[in-house]
Amino acid sequence: MFFRISARTLFTRIVGVIIASGFVGYLFGQTFLAISMVSLSLLAWHYNHLFKLIKWLWQGKSIAPPQANGIWGRIYDGLYRRIRKQRLKQKQLNERIRKFRDGAEALPDAALVLSTELIILWGNKKASKFLGVRWPDDIGLRIDNLIRFPEFSKYLDDGDYHSPCLIISPINNELQLELRLMAYGSDQILLLARDISKIQRLEEMRRDFVANVSHELKTPLTVVRGYVEMVQASETALDPHWKKAFTTIETQVSRMDRLVEQLLVLSRVENNVDADNHQQVNLSHLVLTILEEVQWLNQDKNHSINHDIAPNMSINGNEHELKSACLNLISNAIAYTPTNGIIDIILRNDSNKIRFSVKDNGPGIKPEHVNRLTERFFRVDKSRSRNTGGSGLGLAIVKHVLNHHHGELSIESEWHQGSEFIIYFSPEVA
Ligand code: ADP
Image (cartoon, rainbow, N blue to C red; front, top):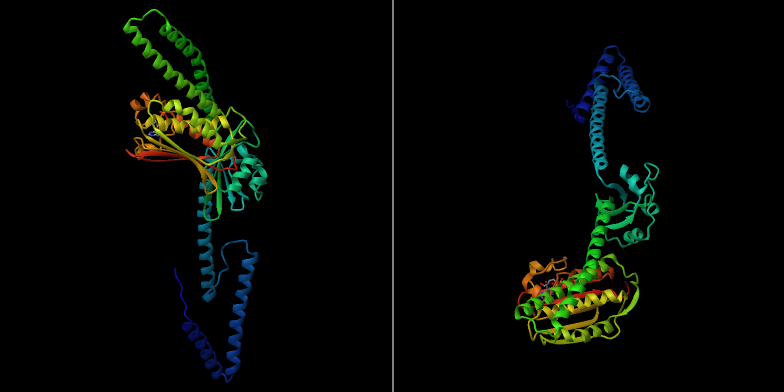
């Protein structure tokens, strides 16, 4: 139902009333009095409705406006229509908010809505269970006043929310939480906290299992190797069949030994067993030592190994782990480059970072394999890798070492042309 009134209609009506009242007054010889009386009555009628409207707006309990005829009836109807529309919208909005809240409560994660100033605006029940956020008492508090862990403060200061932040729950130290922050709407942040205690425990069990099995395998391997060497060194000439068999056993035992050794290194690096991660390590010195040590590896292949090592490049970290990472890249270059290859090893400053690169003119790696190289046991060509004694763990070790040292690994490679493995270190961090 629509009602429209134009200024012209209104004007015509007023003029009509004035003319009509003037005409009636004229008949009785009181034109001015009649016009005045009618105008005053009109004014009184309007004021009466204005009072009714104000009373209804400010004191009325019912949503239905007062009853009236004429223009005021139209005004009240219009207002009533608007109120009903508004109430419907409000109802729909409430329904949506209720659905959102039900959804947020059904989440297995704690969810908090924060303002861009990190002030808590809303949270689900899990937020109080995981993070101790009390509803509604803690609304308006900054989240870093409730979660007071240095790693969380650093995470917020850095402002890089692409990766999660791992913390222990502030109210239950058996709960390990993974916090993720993401933009929510135009001016809010959604914080999700997931309980990863089970995953962490399984991960711990996996690491312990690998470490224990590798450790347990060491002794039998040493015994087998000892006996094989004893037989090979014995004065009694062996039947050619047995000689071949023992050579094969020796080769395979050596492979297994290397694999177990690498598994142990990987689990040590993963478990961060070497607690001293803040040594001042002179990388220049470290790389030169490695270059001396790998000379014997290069005896068969006779590569030209060129190096350009800037002096006194130092970082804070764990010398043992850093040596393992650099050695892996150099020994891979030696192992995978065919005889008489060229290997360039460079250590230098590169715009506020220390850049260590190992470049070879070996077989290169196809682009689709490059991203998978740091996965455990990933080998591009299993048979070639097996011939070189590779286990597929070397680059996984490098990745873990770099995680500890805030380093980055970049791999550039062209199939059939060669590869370059580059590590970037920030000199001030460990
Ligand atoms: P592995 O012990 O097998 O060498 P890594 O993790 O060190 O294991 O390397 C993973 C795979 O990456 C290797 O099996 C090999 O296929 C490839 N790779 C590593 N370095 C090079 C290189 N310099 N040139 C070509 N391929 C390489």
